[in-house]
Length: 252
Image 1 (tube, rainbow, N blue to C red):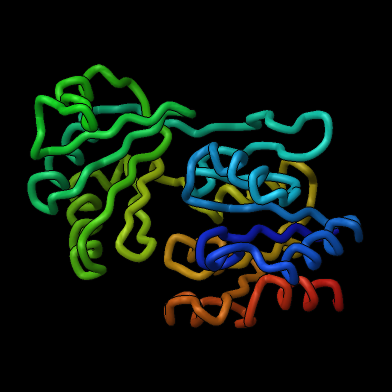
Image 2: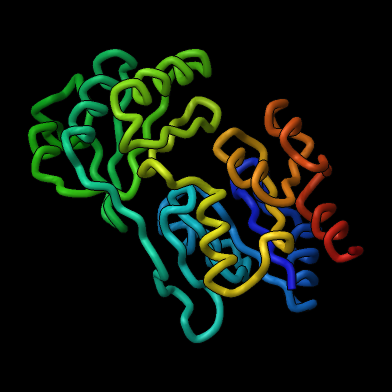
């Protein structure tokens, strides 16, 4: 049995999920293997897959912080969810990112999302008052965005310098996902494989951006052709699409 964990946006889904990818995933699962989506998105990724009518075996949301079963009698079950204690980082990131980069900052705990903005400390119809961040005891993931990749890298460096002991900021283009420190797509895939008893040398991963780096470098990493150069360099091989990765695995 093999596991293939694929990033969603930009890897599996490029303006839509191709029929070729759908057929390849169905063949992969029919051969007794497990296919799942590993994404920076939240738990509502499962709803998106239902809308796409794409059956998968699991979803690792929040960059590996949450595992959700999506097949069989336990479909929809949250197997694990890693949360981080809030010691002031929610308010600091909301204020700093809002004031310096002019961006909102989302905070998700399990399935509840709250959005802050440092330029609107008292809140608006869209944004929650920043003072309420002090009463939030935990979070599953924070996320924000910047205007350019250069700003994104600078913002990540500042977050790491101030909160590197609790936050793991991950770059995905101009977006920044912030799961708890120690959480990334690689640790999520390792935990999933261990739970179901699949050896790590039977784990394959597919991705296109730097928030996929941890799983690409840890397992049999496969980058798609539109991936950023750094990810291609870390991957074992580069393929045109997910369907080509599946063909490769099934040929082993």
